[in-house]
Image (tube, rainbow, N blue to C red; front, side, top):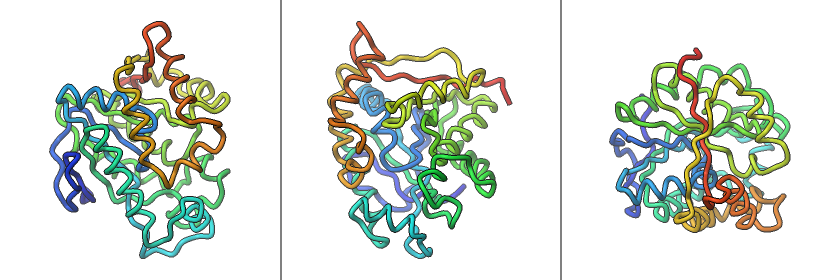
Length: 275
């Protein structure tokens, strides 16, 4: 198993190298903000039920000793960070968001796609096919995740709406673990799933891989999710550059999912018998 970067019961400060306790509800985030963005209401609900949800950031490794491409440096400029503090900034934001949600966190050491050499040098590449060299990451990540998940526990992965390569990889990890009998639910990626036909296109692409949706009312925790999202100050201008008001966009989407029952978040069960 790859060594864990950090885990902590929030709101206490994270401790590097602490071994994570197996989680009954384990949420995989490709990057430091993805779970709070996409299904933070459900995380907060589980935390309120003393279910001890765990968010695991998969591509949370620190690239400070690796050469950076121009594309990676451009991303840092957008975030207002440099090579030396980009990950520290994002970790601090994650801890703040997790404290609001009331959950625990862990980090795996894999590098974000923008740091994995010259495989992804543009947004078109970042939201395109997974590079062949990255295929070997799936089994490694799956082994790490299996060690973090309690027997009979539920794993949550991104559906990969929008097709970001890191989201695709974590979805494939979920497919592999579902094939081995793990209960896996795919959450709808925010904000990608709110843009155009991205969600519908992704659902069309995974027909036969997911079952009927599992809708979770989050009326009592939607405000908590929004507060957690607001903790990612380095990311908000980039993430929501296509939205006039991100709070309104998320609230409206949650209301549309829940309908008469009120705001909700939607998950898609991965069918176990496929692979």
